Length: 260
Image (tube, rainbow, N blue to C red; front, side, top):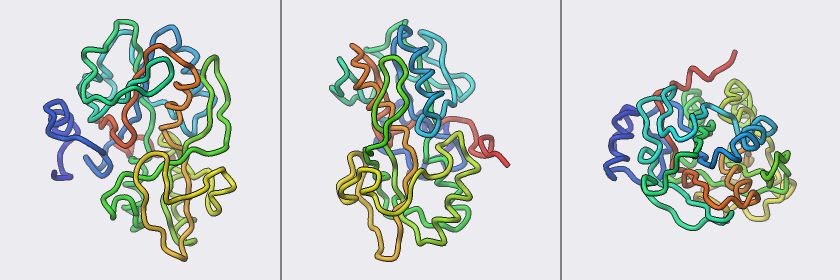
């Protein structure tokens, strides 16, 4: 698939089942979002969870109760415009589906959260290699031993994504990503993964393992899969997220999220 598709064209293909799988590297220049959909009864607590944990849960947009649209982000139908959805029942992931029209309820609220795929473009523009893209793989993601700040029923450990860099490039990556707090911002750790509770980088909890050269440091960013652990802790009868790596591609430009 061409990487020059507009977000609207890509969403049309997703609706038609013509694009499945990761959205990493697609529609360059445009913001991609993690998605959380849950009942209105728990929306305020989840909003506070995001506010208390802005690194893994940077809020981009919140929908109105029962509304499938996110007009600030484009002509979107949240029931069909994500390549794959993860359905949680009683706190446990139960299935992954390409369409949630049959599951939609009038009391659902949609949360769109910033995604690291947006800052990957800034790294590429600066001449840095983003290994998951160069290898054509989904970014590796890991559960850590770092606790998020609780809100109501929502709690859990921080999930991180990892990209390897030489030391000088890692410093540059930190400088670049610090300009994008709305898409996870600067990394939260670099170097020894065991210090944040990761035993084996070759066995990610989500996504795909990627090559790490001998002289490279693993660099870890807070990840938007973190809310999925919080949903498990909340034990809601029904909630829905994107499948890891399968994001909502919006009409918002990455440049709109940069801070000086």
